[in-house]
Amino acid sequence: MDNNVIFNEADIGCHLDNHRGHYIQRDVIELAVGYGYIIGGFDQFVINLYESHSHYEDYPHEELTELCDAAIEWLNSGQHECPNCNEGIDPRDGDYWTHKDDAEGIKRCKRCTGTGRGPRIPHQNFPPLIPHETQWSFNDGDFGLYRDEDEELMPA
Image (cartoon, rainbow, N blue to C red; front, side, top):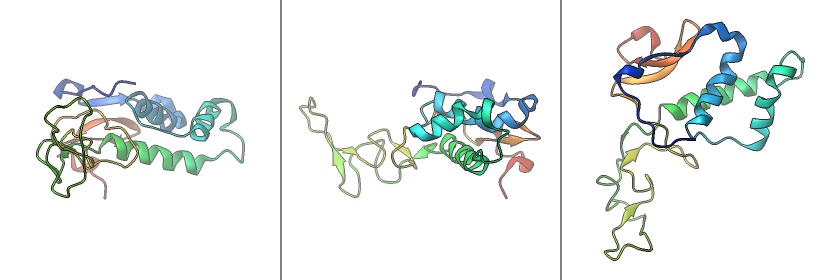
């Protein structure tokens, strides 16, 4: 897991191509997990069994789709400034924390954990930063980081 990844303009495009077929949802989740997305033990168990059990009638395909959607939502979150503070300091709502070794007692925003980023999905790490006006999404069966101006890639 690497929480310090910053994608740049050269990273825009397909990251997982459609030759993966029905495995692509699992692969999107694994990509997100690799960048810090937190999933539970049961979700990881289901992902681990995908290759050998996805053909079973009772395999939880809908839940896998929902987890994939949540992973994409997470990948696209935290790309703006936190509305509650000034670059992670002096939160407007008064909900803050201070670092135990900080002699100055700087009040750091709890909502963004002092990063200045937002909005944050509760109980999750922040995803990698992506270039302005881009988003993670599917395009003709491929999954990647695409520009927002590509209207066909924008969610309805």
